Length: 176
Image 1 (cartoon, helix red, strand yellow):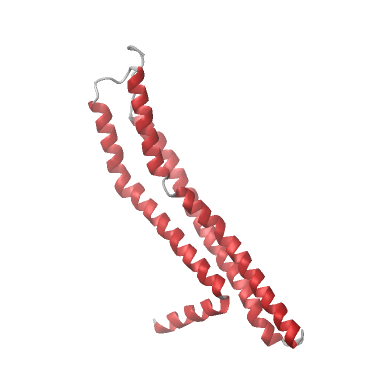
Image 2 (image 1 turned 90 degrees about the vertical axis):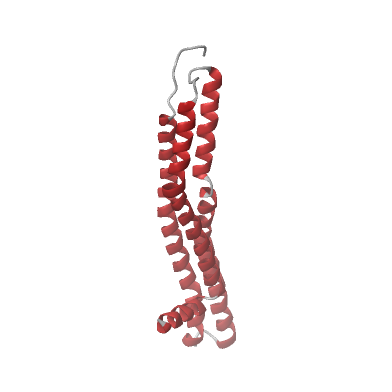
């Protein structure tokens, strides 16, 4: 276990400060995604059931006012489903940009070494090349993992919103 910690620490040092920031952003992104999964599968079913029960207890399902109340309830619940998804999309988009920042800072380090030691010192340039490539890779991996799961979350929110709207049945006719 301690060797694994040392390996991770060496990897983070090789990638530079940008890699640490990518790691922080990835942890925040995954925390938000796990919260959404928890909400979708543990909290929202109870909220939807409560809304459906509340709707069914209403006597009036066909008037214009009832339709507006239903529309408002469906809209509120859809907003709850989509809560936090915009933040996840931003963090997913931020990861490859931070990887690019790591590339630029690593290449600046390579050019600094070349200016001081010349282009013949490959060992001195290797640190800058690592700082240029590792954050790029980490940013892309983080973005891909976030992209796949955020697409799943967004699809679930859209589908569940539609199912909820279908469960809150309306009656046509009456004094509409």
